[in-house]
Length: 202
Image 1 (cartoon, rainbow, N blue to C red):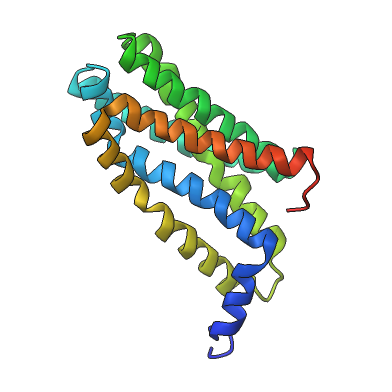
Image 2 (cartoon, rainbow, N blue to C red):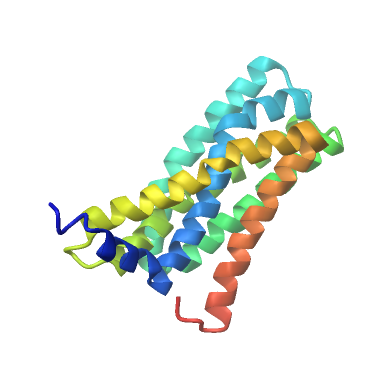
């Protein structure tokens, strides 16, 4: 037990470039997931003007899509690759959050809210390809403590999503807060694209 949780090996694991890169991707995903889980119903009700009942219904739809697409994206990532699948989820996030921002700023109501919520639900299935990426990088001996360590690292950091988005919503309004989430997804997509296009080896 002492050897598995020695500080040196844990620091070494987190400092590996490919592990650090994947942890950064997961942190962006966790940041966005945390903020969405905290504020999507409020955004739909206050930001887009939907009723409490409709907002709650769409929040349920979000979780249904999120849960239903995770096995699919996991299976797809086995076929076409982790990064290509993660890029699909991040792209869905950019479009989904952008659509929700449009619903709020252009007063489009359900016309934009429904597809926006569906795309955001798909986007939040990023965990399947990204977490599988961790497992590909860890040896059999490292997968227990190692995966627990990286998961703790990105979840603790990503937990700031609720605080940051809540602060932005107070300062600049709900459209700006959810536009920030679109930007985080765009950053994740750009990071994946750069690795793929330029062969960075991460």
